[in-house]
Image 1 (spheres, rainbow, N blue to C red):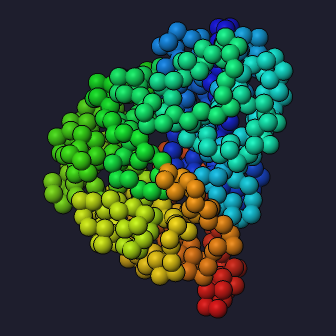
Image 2: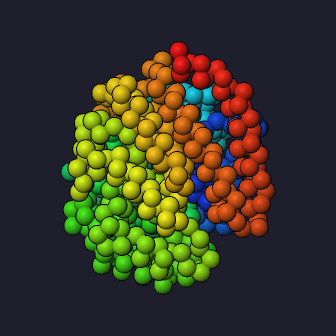
Image 3: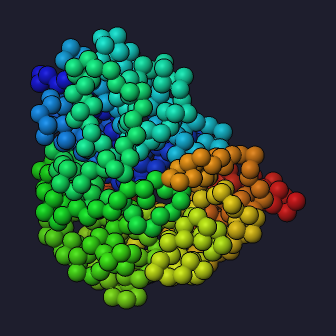
Length: 505
């Protein structure tokens, strides 16, 4: 058994490849509905394959970056599946736990929690892990516990649990520049701060960002960090924009291929801005990127993590770039569609101008609803299936803004998509604002939630039938999702008269 002094891990909702389907991971952001939690967890987050040392063949990308940085600096560090960390009790001196949504306070978890009144499974899973016997033994042996990741801020809202678990340090931000010094201090028995925020002045340069050493979940590979749009509800916009060189991207794809991961998810806050001129997509860098990626991933799927609707509209209308990339580099061989996350956030131009004035750029924010509809049409025509978000309860929101969002949803009904409503969570430059809570929900919000429900159910059935989970080994998962959709439709039919009465009141 290799003796590792630094163990990096997470709970099961993170340490899974979700049956090789990234979107299924979103089930872990909700509570188990009409089925045992174990069945829900099997649908959302089945166990990963591991080697003889308990090292997963795929692991969350953020953990892979931390692992790579520590290994490059000479530490005996490795990502270990949570079911195997007990094997390292004797050698472990630092336990690092990463997560994007520790306590389900992030979107969309908080929305499902408020709506259903039940704690999401990601929260339950993480808290069980932190209270597990093995973590208790880790603490008894004097091991330093460091937690971090995009959800690190949530520990500030769980101070009692922080003390209960004996967490030594909560670290937030891009950590590549500082993590070596932090771990070195922990190993030397030096005192650590309770909380550490890595601000823009300490964000790593491209040269300081390491190449991952092992496979990432579903082949996720970072192509860019930061975002130039400056939306007030987003913390990513606080960080500088950096493009990852093509040779580094290729290195990481090859790492995944060696690990047996045959597909790739190109990760950025806005994939179509890779190599861009400000907020205007440029054809050459994007075509070169996709050409090289397809030459490496010959038979696997290519996906995008996120794109902005305005960049998508501009790229297609100016250069026919979207249809070019999709038809010549993505929808080839057996791949029939591409999935991506997009942000609508609001259908109100007035509110968009206040909260996200550059979201529509290079188009004027006053035509934001038109930008959204045009982008959805382009995606529909090119077999791009978006998972789109709306944010209810944004600071400064008025009733008419919510009505405008409902009107936009009516315009989007003809376009294949999943649309998820989320409640405002205080992040980014709005982190000092109040949360959107259950008592804030008005009739207009209920109307929007109903419209997103009917839109999503309508298209989810077609997506499942024609595009998603086509592999034979996923037949049980597909059947489980179909049964779940039928249950939700039945349940909604029972509640519909009561809900509609509330809206009419």
